[in-house]
Length: 305
Ligand SMILES: C[S@@+](CC[C@H](N)C(=O)[O-])C[C@H]1O[C@@H](n2cnc3c(N)ncnc32)[C@H](O)[C@@H]1O
Image 1 (tube, rainbow, N blue to C red):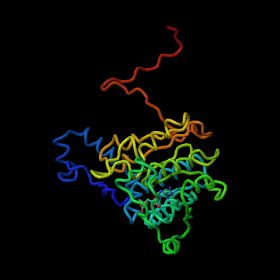
Image 2 (cartoon, rainbow, N blue to C red; image 1 turned 135 degrees about the horizontal axis):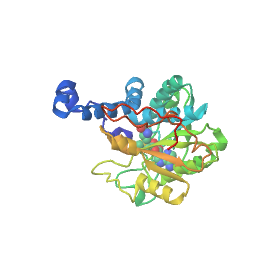
Image 3 (tube, helix red, strand yellow; image 1 turned 120 degrees about the vertical axis):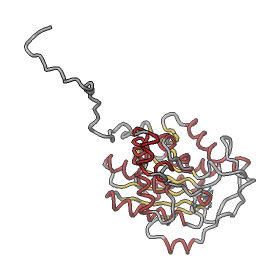
Image 4 (cartoon, rainbow, N blue to C red; image 1 turned 135 degrees about the vertical axis):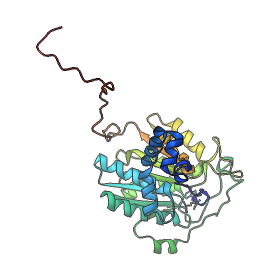
């Protein structure tokens, strides 16, 4: 569950924060400093979302919402849906509502919020793949009236996902799914939740920002590739030719790397009609630079070689 997430840190690298740029430049040279600043700038998108709008300190939620809204905006979608699978008491869903309101106002995109949960806490583990050495049925039961009283517009989808996932699109007609937070703890429940990515055409963005809460853990959980959420992800990929979940390599390659960066996956729907729609910088050129100290040769016209 999300409470186990270690607080991520966005401190500047010590060489910059402790010594100041002058000393750092003297000891490292200019290029590494430039690179460090560039790296920090490239992470500023979710730093801003986290610090400005995230009172519960869930940068992983902020990142998924903000990036899915940006993608939707670039593709010209007016509305998206954001889902939390596994709500428990509801603190995460309240945070999600708060983040979605702020990001919706900022980007001019409507965001619907859905929270899936049994309402009665964890079901019985089905077998060893649900990690019964760590989870017990009834953990994380919801106080439904108390949560409903705190929610402004998020919709609760109550019941076991094995029953609710199949009826979701017909019952709610949700806007395309842009982001999904997976915090169901079990392999079997995550398999059921991932079936929403088999929904009808138009039920998701071409790339969906996902967060998986239970893939790192600690010395008791011992999450691995053969049980739990990691197994559900692997089986989803093996079972789908044209739709895949991939780690977000751009987050884990560039320091500073937080634990949650390893927990972000992107769903790529290669057959989505908008998968190839251009969303990048429209002005990309790499002209040849003049050699230092040499003037460009004047153009010779009217002569054939
Ligand atoms: C760790 S809690 C979620 C915590 C919440 N995301 C947060 O950050 O506060 C896991 C939740 O998943 C729900 N859950 C697990 N399997 C489920 C299933 N098959 N159908 C519906 N809900 C399920 C449980 O009821 C439980 O409340």
